[in-house]
Image 1 (cartoon, rainbow, N blue to C red):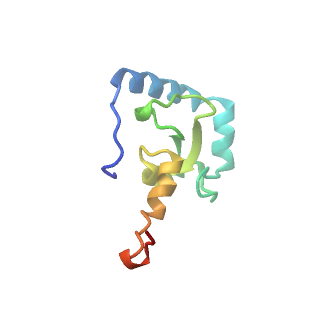
Image 2 (image 1 turned 90 degrees about the horizontal axis):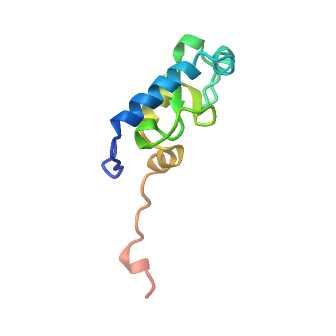
Length: 107
């Protein structure tokens, strides 16, 4: 994980939200998403057993286990996202832009 991501862990919040997530996964809404088999992030189709659930705003970052914050995604996408938000993940994939050479900077 990148060292520029800092957050304070609230273990009680994490435990509570993960328990809520386990219950939400059993609902018809999420079971239907599993059956469809489409990864929220890459859009590829997978068998249900190859899919996981992800919190868009990670629980360790204060995210909640709600229908609007949980998505079905493939394991590689979930692992690459880790505890980043989708915006942070995209920025990390783009990399930091290089500064122009000093001779090209107008003062």
